[in-house]
Length: 299
Image 1 (spheres, rainbow, N blue to C red):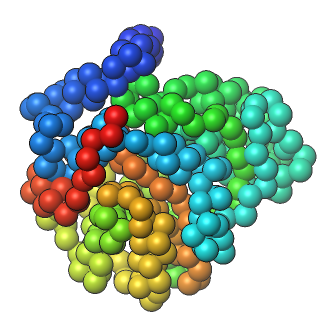
Image 2 (image 1 turned 90 degrees about the vertical axis):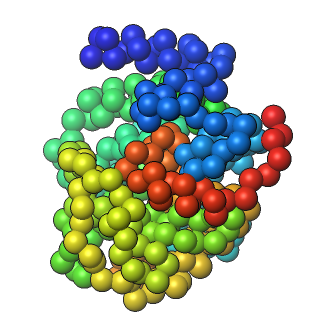
């Protein structure tokens, strides 16, 4: 752990001065080839081009798990928002007495660092505060080469802990996460994640007609191949929600839940896996990249 911390500090230091260098190093280490930012072709390269060479001010607002709520309302989709219980600048300001027996805590500037509380009476408040304090102080963007994360104001939010609905529970022990890939405002693919734990998740990619495409994925111990799950009855409505949110952007992944027919907004992700996705095949990354029309370089 000590060595990992040192590496992260070095990466953060480089990322503060030259985020593009961090991306180039990480891309080379992961894919064993050079990233082409001057003539980006595949999905990862185009995400990195947008992240490093265009204005991502709006990305910062929409990757912020609290600020994005205003954007969802601006799009006329306030009814898809999960119930918000509170927001705090400091982990030690969290008013646990005001929270219900179950809830979820998230940092606005992080990724995958939520705290799920199913029974408040059994929660170690001090341990939770210490953990969230550490997460608030971590600059995810610097070490990953994703500058838009570094501009997010660190806060903690508490939201309703959504229960799985009976139909979804037939196929997943966790909420089914429908991650909708949108290119230039149109939804093309849904990456469905089920049975999620800290050890991984079952995944399968579908097209917008709900045809399964296992050939698009590279399955691993963490991203396991899922069985085909039924098409949501309100899939067209889900795609419409995703497209309304994604309309201004060349590429974004809109994450949604679908509980008893109610669509619930999850988050908007502009740099999926830091723009270094290795859970898709090279063919898929190439074909998806060709669907994205890039703006001119602006920074």
